Image: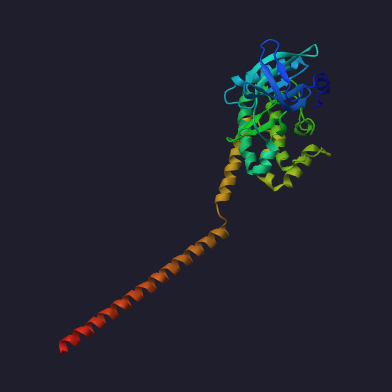
Amino acid sequence: MMMNNTLRNQCKLLPGSLITGKWNKNRYKIIKELGCGANGIVYLVESENRHYALKLSDNGTSIISEMNILKSFSKVQGSTLGPSFLEADDFMETGKQLPFYVMEYIHGHDFLRFIEKKGSSWIGVLMLQLLTSLSALHTNGWVFGDLKPENLIVTSPAYKVRCVDVGGTTLIGRSVKEFTEFFDRGYWGLGSRKADPQYDLFAVAMIIINSAYPARFHKKGEGYRQLIDLIKQKKELHPYRKMLDKALLGKYDSALQMREDLVTMLSNQNHLKKKPSSQAATRQATTRQARRSQSHSKKMRGGFFETFLLVAIISILYVLYIYEQLL
């Protein structure tokens, strides 16, 4: 994806600059740049003491398309992938009219940094959420397209996975508009770039792989064999092997099918963690038996001592009684 250097040269907006809508007259103060892609620049902005994300572009067609996608997301029940849409307007800069739209600013942690900080056990939990949202999206006729960790934010404190860029979202049946090679099945020789649910599910598999290989890698030789070999080399990926294999080969009909396999895998993982090994179980049983024996011995010793003491006291009392009788 090429950076939009043309737009950046046209409008050099520094922190503190103001963007005022031509039509709605709403004012937004730029705090910082969040990202720059082929279709525009996204800024973190402030308006009436609230933070928003504002996307400015020199491509009116792209802006309209993305706005329509965001609006359609809001109608998809159960989908929390994209940010909510606020408004659209035009910005006049150096005599040129530039379209922009304003959306919810999703605050949180970068996906890969979150996994690095919290641990690989969170991968499955977050992918369950992602697959649920993708299922709702696919049901409504869309494919996300450019699905990758850079576009995923983990919110806090609820720890929910959200997406911050919908630029690659494409209607099912059309050609994917935007993609990143590492997450693109076409690059790995494992399918076309036609928008279908399996395209997104391939990307989900690559996100899981990317979690174990943060630096990523390039294709060398036969793509599928390379990926399978690399999965085998990482212990944290072993539980996902069957699921990853099916996703890479496009064997899932839906995101829900992949989610069901992930639920099963995570359930098995938890069961194995809770269930002790046979040797450990034997050691635990031996320890419990030893403790019971020690407890029993203590009780036996305690009982013997009590009996001896009682006999001694009775003997002394008897002797005293005889002595008194003799007197």
